[in-house]
Image (cartoon, rainbow, N blue to C red; front, side, top):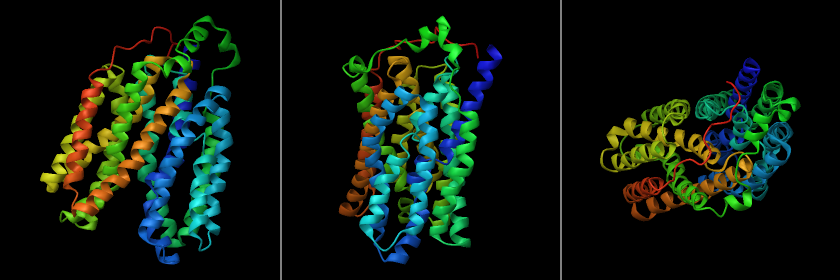
Length: 406
């Protein structure tokens, strides 16, 4: 039984890495920038108009995440994931036929988050969390590393398609990868505990351990989590989206700024796994405090010493690399398993609500003041507020006292 749980858990974690690497979190948000110049050139749309697609996706996630949580809790992550992959592929492929119609362009980006409802991190993290307790943080970190892998690979794939063909073929190529690579891999690797496991008293006790959704959303720690991740969303995503133009304005070349962005991606990838390991051994809110302080330092350094951009980018990589590891971990430790999906979906949506506001806000401050300094100082203050908030988090309620052998 021990080897069975270990094998199935590792397979599910591997499938989650692949699924997240070629999922909407990467393709529809983090890797959309290579498409902006060619679409802008073909249709004559402004950069703001083309870039609005990422903001649309961010706000759609706010509405889609709670529904994803309900579906995952109701039907299980495997069914929701396998159903969503072909729909996500269809949404990407439809962009191959895009005419010169800005409303249709926006409509497609409204539909893509809906089509890919099962493919946001919650689905995969819920699948992984069913197999691990004692090493939960490390397992979640390894799964979440898929976003870092995708952030490194997908832009290279897009660039190769655009250079060889055009941006339309790039969308079609990504759709093919999602359908013919991601779907088979997840079909054969994403596992759920077999029916006989559900008759095991220890397993039943663990899965039924927790707070129901209606009670959980009335508890102070739930509001504290929502507030903390709203503040993190408000700052982290906006800093990443503006990192390259910020460096260029400070005197870095395009090539140098792109190199710094690549270092950020590697730091994020490393942090996913490292932070996951650390929170298995240390109180997770304290870990979040530490990376938030690092993020505040990065903001101040970008304002006062942009020549140290490499250090700032690495600190930001750790900030973003920690966020969803810690969120997935804390929900299980504070609320247990009963309403895990719905609670994660709501807080994940709150994060993206802050993200959308932060992306627009930092750009607006830059436009009004003529530089990024004011926005960076505000972001540093917001992150320090998050540090104070996380200092108030109570001890865990659900420790890993019931778990399968790993």
